[in-house]
Image (cartoon, rainbow, N blue to C red):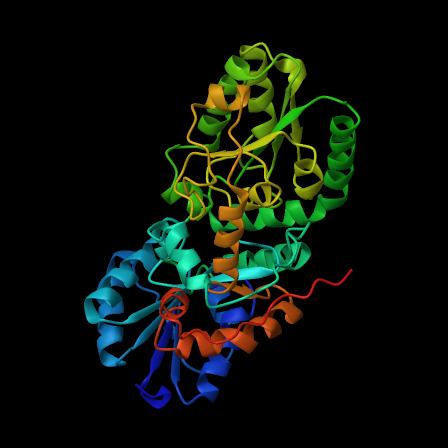
Length: 426
């Protein structure tokens, strides 16, 4: 199929101008591009042609989507995340019609990479079924010096800015898009206020974080690190055994109290974008008192993960991509939900109390091969939220989307093109 015969249908994307810039570049190849918007934020971030507003009740979306795919002769569906209802419904319709599904997500090896896959991401990714042995076989044809693990999450200020602007636009356009329902539990106004509050509180949170980190690093005690996620994150909601983050907190504190040596401590590290919608600190303090470990449990609000991981004995998480920073350092890790990196070679399956008592070390050679495979396939240098990051993405993503094979198949079959790799600036 030539590019002039392809029609890319965009749904919702990351906050900011990334999808609009990507659509512009796809048009330059001769392809047609259309965007369906569900609120004013979608419209503001797609200022050019090819915009279709969906303003009907959301139970009409599957019918409308199917009709658009037929009337526009859509060949490709483009979206950010695959679990929000409007996306999951569109993916089912696309598969029935043989339409290629392009899924973008935050990087599995963030912050300097984003994820591009076909068909699904996270628990729906092809990585879930690929073995380390298959990856090693594919890697026999390539030779790459892997960059060191980055120490920061990424374009944090830009991410917060675009998020606040997006939700502000959604709130302002409620009359025109009165049937829009966000895929999260909070209202649009509540989301906007949380983004704004988090942005304004950054200086205060930075001081709190530095004080808490200093107490831990100067304490001289061994500690285990619990890497927390956003309760409303797609990976947690769709691919986790827990109904809430507080359920995970309870499991971890109980396992620590029952298994960890008496001189060990437990550190909960909040996600950098944690906005306070879940009362993490009060619940952690309550659970620590309940299990008799109040003096040995700590909480750090956001910030860099690297400085805490460097001295940790082990890490636990539901299925956070940040768990790979622990594996890169050779730390034992225990996961609970479906994670693309949860391979038996390097992720522990011990009961949690046994893990805290004597965690099994990962096969670091196997993990490095896994990481190498990701850098040659689905991890693309760049970011959604900064102008520089978007420019770096565009140098590679358009060609990947036009390629006949998805990145995994291309490497497995030996047809993958050379990849641009990250050069870390010291």
